Image 1 (cartoon, helix red, strand yellow):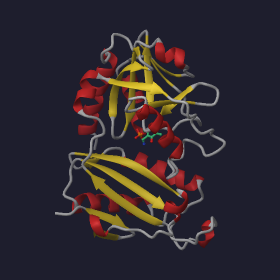
Image 2 (cartoon, rainbow, N blue to C red):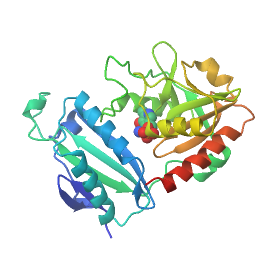
Image 3 (spheres, rainbow, N blue to C red):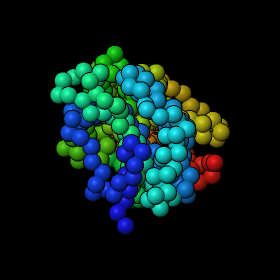
Image 4 (spheres, rainbow, N blue to C red):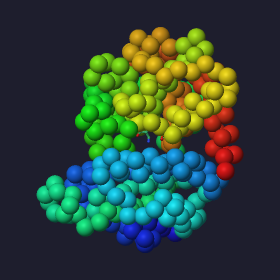
Length: 287
Ligand code: PMP
């Protein structure tokens, strides 16, 4: 059976799911999106994803043409139509069909697209053995350009960094800001553990405020592991006892080397593994 894609109220077979070449989402990256996971037929933190989506849309002055409740129902409908209980869900809102000019006022109405898939980002061996990552030259876009808090369709900043990482043989790349502080990876947030304290860059402006990141912060509190948001440099990465990345697709993935420097003992750290186990419990148990 062909998978079904939701576009503006209708479900289409995958091969018939098409949008106009005049959509400003395509022409200019003018739109916003979310990546969401369903576990056992339940969508993990859908409300938080919708809140972030509507905030991103508000920032780019794009009015999503349906309520959060209706969009939530549309996501569930699409999941059901695809017979998926464990899934990755891509929710995309584009500015819609316009002219070749920039003016968004010439766009008729925003499009709502929901795509489901069964992917998992990294092979199982990386959860057991850890990931090798690198820092890359492309700097994370400055918050006064387009805030990295906004999950917009313009991902070129991240894609350039991803290419640089892949060219260096790494599946994920760490981006610094213009001052040399660590921000996040191309599609994941980053944490280190130093002397029992979990540390991550602050959410206020320079990174995407990840939903998995927030779940990890809650778990750290619950597990009585000291945690702080703080500015990190390459020094903190190279001298960390543990490092891990978080994201909807990746969940929590251990990092064992950064720029060819071994992290800790060169294998996934205990705090990382404990958090991963707790996080997986959460994805199975949350209503
Ligand atoms: N940073 C960036 C740039 C991302 O694209 C993502 C994935 N959405 C994340 C961090 C992780 O966020 P989340 O945990 O909400 O998936």
